[in-house]
Structures are given as C-alpha cells and as structure tokens.
Length: 229
Image 1 (tube, rainbow, N blue to C red):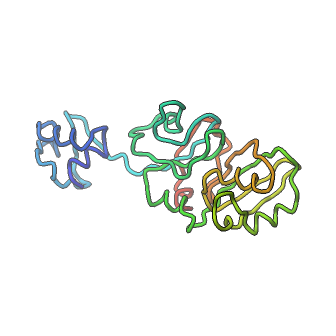
Image 2 (image 1 turned 135 degrees about the horizontal axis):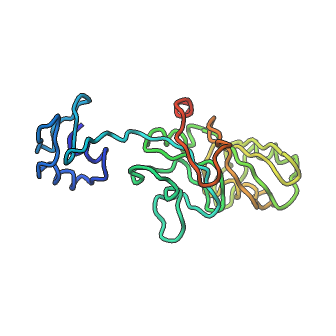
C-alpha cells in the first residue's frame, strides 16, 4: 500500500493532507523520515506521524438497532442519521447496506466493504429481509398466496418477486422479501388495500437483530455473521 493511502486509512487525513504531512517530514517508517508519498508500506513496517504510531482501521461490519425518527443516510441537514449514533473512528468511510424509511425501526447493517454490501442489496443475490408488519385493517389468509405469487405495484411494470407472509394475528404479520424497492413493504400492502402502521426489520439473511441492543445501540458483527452473507 502506498504511504499516502496508508495515512488516509489509518487517520483522518485526506489524500492532500497526507501528502503534505509526508512532504513536511512528519512521517517516519521504522524511525526513518520518509518523504515519498508512493513509498510501499509493508506489514512489517512501523509507521508514525509526529512520533505516534498509526494502524490501519481495516474493514468494519456492524449492526445497529435503528430507532424511529432517524434517517439512513451519512449526512442530513434536518434529521439525525444512523451514522450520528455511532461513536467510531472514520465514520465517513462507512455506508449503509440497505436503507430503512425514517419511521421504520430495526436492523440496519453498516460496513466499509462495498462488495459485502452489494451481496445484501442486489436483487440478484436474493438476500431475504424479514419485517414485522402491523397494519390498519384485518389480514386475510389469502394474502399468503397473493404475496407468494407477486404483487403489482403502482407505476411499476411486472410483479414483485415472491415474498413469504406469515400471519401472526389479525393485524400483525412477518413478511420476508428479497428485493429492496422504494417503500416496498408499504406499497405491497397498499396494493392489496391495507395500510402499514408499524414496520420493524428483524433480520437480513441469517443476521438477526441482537435482542440485547436497545434502539440507537450497535455492535460489531461476529465473524460468523460476516461470513453468512
């Protein structure tokens, strides 16, 4: 890895600031000043900035229990974001692997790994997302077959991919979908004449929201959870 990139990946430096720090002689490798931004850093090297050792942050994977009223965005001028809830190094490097609406709660996965995120969000990968849904009007058992066959959404061609509906009681169900269309769950129920009044994502693939996490809390994923995607 180039020295300037190493500084960016291990600190809050932008590429321009990293080059400036290197050129000014503030960066050392194994105690020796290095002024070449293209210097190749190896794992055995000890890189310091003004005497303080730097270490790569590395790829990060975490789950967050999203509370109501937060937006799934890195920056928002009006509403608090899920990134605002994280006390973590280099939050600007993180992105959200599958967004939720502002009034939807539950599991949000956040990572620095774009390929891992793609495996969650791409419809071709058919990664199931399970939601606990509360609706305004009583649920008809016929909806199980309707959702399994696919639903025609307003202003879209074709049907949604087959979805699995489990009716819990008259106004509550679990719905598992493998797509991520805009407001998809709400639009699917609207298409059959009902209205979603509560929506909570319980799982993504085999990753289940940790029961110990209160709304607004987060933790890093385990190795098994990361590998499950």
